[in-house]
Figure 1: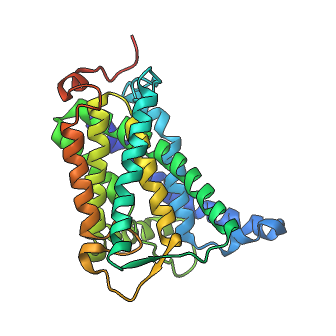
Figure 2: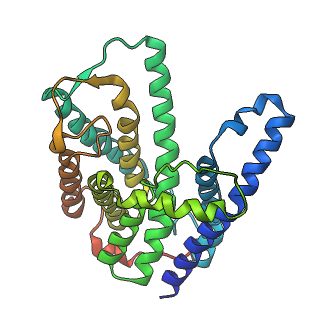
Figure 3: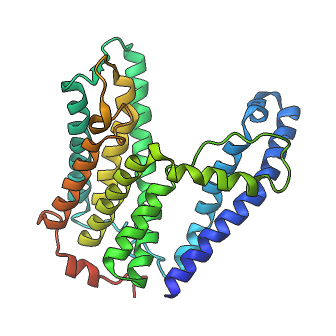
Length: 308
């Protein structure tokens, strides 16, 4: 249970440090905005954004010490080693990820829940595609390294595979639904400690339960793909394909008079039963597919520590 203890200490440490330093960064932002006119926008940012950024920065800053503590100190140990089959895995992941959410998106268009937006200027389309592609690459690499390479990799050492899949995927989903809570009143040293519990209530908000379940299943797909292949590259491609459509779909389509309802969802794509079924089908496919390169038993025997 050493790995589980290290992970618990890491997350508690991230929460504590981020909530304590966020007020200082907020005050620093106010000071800089008064001294340097071209960053005046810092003074207009609400405190909850400072807390969100501090949580992200502290989590990333602690990732390397966390990986070292878990003996995940090589590219191979976290699934990012480039091998002769990595290109094929990445390409296959991109095709499956892009195609699976495209299928869900087309479903919403075909039944009339959304309509294609043909009035976008060419410059807007180009900018949208570039931003979506950049976001897809960055988000997929960072989140796969963090949630699958390190978190799932560590839990896989500490417990059985189903538990590791469930815990890492639930955490992955939960952190996407922190509530955007406006902080009222003067910011002092304890403001982060006050705001964080309110942000966490977003995880259990009724409107977030179905999207959170969808992301949990999606996280399990990504983790199981890593487990089966012994590499993150299929998961990176799969994740990137999803992020691309999540960034693009809302802009390239517009609301139609036909209501979507709980089955079809909205322009968010992940808040309907249709996308949940797509994720469930992918989970079954990843579990059974022979295209991923090796059996679960072989992948599970792959050592998780650094190269000897």
